[in-house]
Amino acid sequence: METCFRLPMSLSSSIPEDLPPVPPRRPWARWAALAVAALLLLGGAWHWWSITGRDTTPIRWEDLVPPASTPLRPWNVIVIHHSASRKGSVAGIDNAHRQRGWDGIGYHFVIGNGEGMRLGAVEPTFRWRNQREGAHAGGGAQGRPFNQLGIGICLVGQFQEDQPDSWQEERLADLIAELMHHLPTLGAARIIGHGDVPGKDTDCPGKHLDIDRIRYLVRQRM
Ligand SMILES: [Zn+2]
Image 1 (spheres, rainbow, N blue to C red):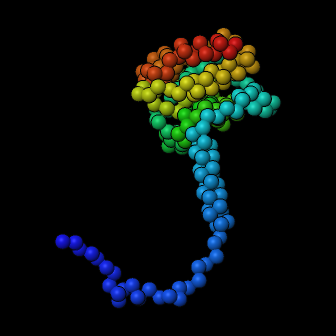
Image 2 (image 1 turned 180 degrees about the vertical axis):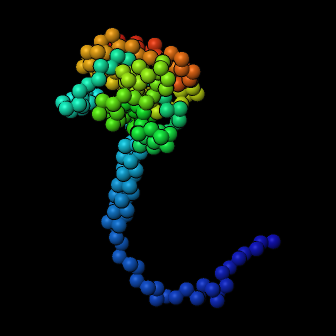
Image 3 (image 1 turned 30 degrees about the vertical axis):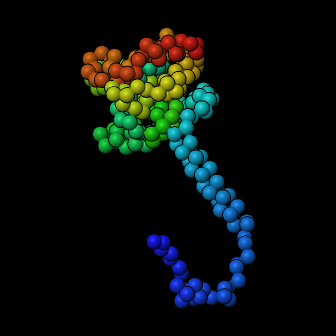
């Protein structure tokens, strides 16, 4: 037996015959929407890149050298640190160190990891610009010479657990090489990790930051 469904006459006849006129097409509207979407996408990509993209700004002594009125300290050692955090910036570390009662961030330079600062961004702090002694090597008689004559460089990262990004290491080596070129007192520079400061019991700069590799990268640039 066949079944056949028909539209009841009452329904089919209820479609009005005098439909309202079709509005005119607006082909530009679709293109405008596409253009806006593309702009938003580009803007988002640029924003993302400006935060996480590599910083490739050349590291030049002309940009680092303090004003002539600020004599250079006779630096003789470079002490490398990590921030022991996966995210960080000069402002954030400065804030944390002030809360310890210091007069500001203890390091002379900070190098970003793309979380809080661009990956490989090298930022000098007030301690470098004013040629002030550092607050990074630890107190006591043993740490004191490393604060007075040691340039403290902090890499944002937690290198007791994570591998440093190779670009961050390259930028560290670029910075050290540039400093060595222009600071005669660093001629026979010692590059050490924070944990190498005599009497200092610390994991800093973390077991995954290989100081020998940094020395090798610096030698390549000299
Ligand atoms: Zn340290």
